[in-house]
Length: 246
Image (tube, rainbow, N blue to C red; front, side):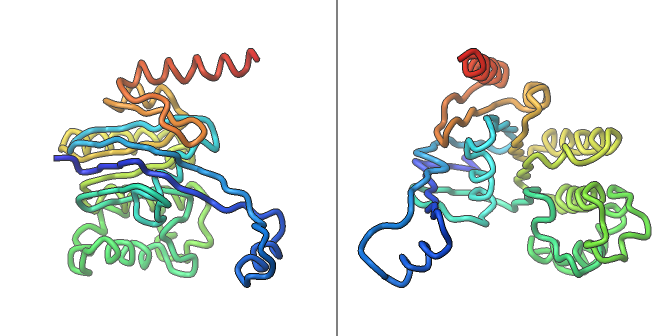
């Protein structure tokens, strides 16, 4: 049974040249349409079984992050269906889900509560999270004082230690140092081997071929290729080469 099922998924944004145009349209001033439509995703369909690892690749602006945000439930699609079964932990844009004024410790417990875990359960996991993040006394400082690397260390530590059924990762590993990247990949391998489903958005094509058992290529909001990582990466490289040549 699929844990993720996406059917004819599309996401439309309205693009306004000036802020006043949006206000004028909302208030109904004039009959002319003042926006342009931009389809970030256009008729995307795929499914994932438990334990699969999916890499999503494509150029900037191809719809990768938009798709991940819809899977995470923080953005609604314009058309189509998106079914996600199980507990989802998401590492999206830097700082997503964290309150800047709270300490690292407070944010750990808040994120646990969002994922349906009570204080007692999070207390059992806290030492593992702190050891994984390795940010020392900064755990009790407001996260607005954190560097981008510290921020991502804590976010990743929480995401991989709350026993998710599905882990969504959007370019998160690019922020950490080499040692932490190895630690993250080791933990993600453990999750994969234990039957968790992982969706990874990245520009690191080597990571896709080594870690994932399936990949999809998005281009201009459309699904261009779906299959074995080597094949999909080869298609992407050929696409980029042809565009550079032109």
